[in-house]
Length: 268
Image (tube, rainbow, N blue to C red; front, side, top):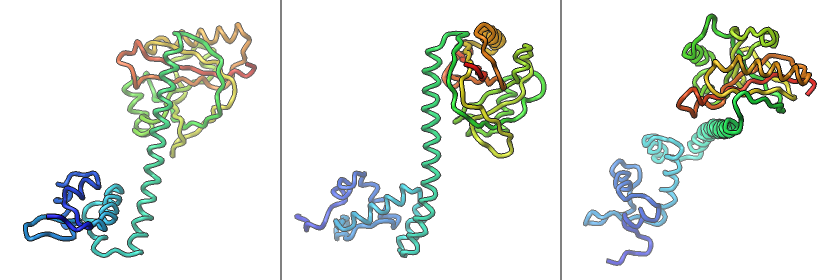
């Protein structure tokens, strides 16, 4: 049977819109979207003019509206109803864009950190430029904190999202570094401004940076090398020492762990 030019079978309509025809059967069964005509043989026939309506329904589904929400609007479409949906979904989309942008920034930062880890040697010293950065800080937990204790402490203070998306580390005063009192950190920090935390500014400028490969037992030796380098090159250090892990998300052993320490070099 030759169909009128405005009629399409279920298979033809499904192909036109790039979906499985079972989806169309399902939508018809639940009353969400039905063919314009059903023959005596039970065959479904769609009108080309239904394409716009169908794509509109798909758009609403892409906006994470439930079947019931779509059916409710479709049963009584109105300008006011659409504007309400638009305002709500535009707000949700903006939040999702911000979330995805944060994820993209995090991936780019992690990529750069891994490339840096591949380029440095153990106990390597560099002078690097640093942009100004404001960080949130919390006190370091009392006692000799294990990795598990530190992780739990940061999770409670900063939240899981920060652990996943942002850099975190610890800091200690220059006085402690120069006196080799390295067992008592002053606090933990994250590169985000969070509520209920203090903030500190890492000033723009040149920084003496050191890198250690391996577990945390390398840290005292790295501080020793950095202080010796500063003395030999008459570099005036100031502010706290900022200590951060660069690749904990991409290693299977602490032997591959890379720590970065940086201290402001005022006259470099």
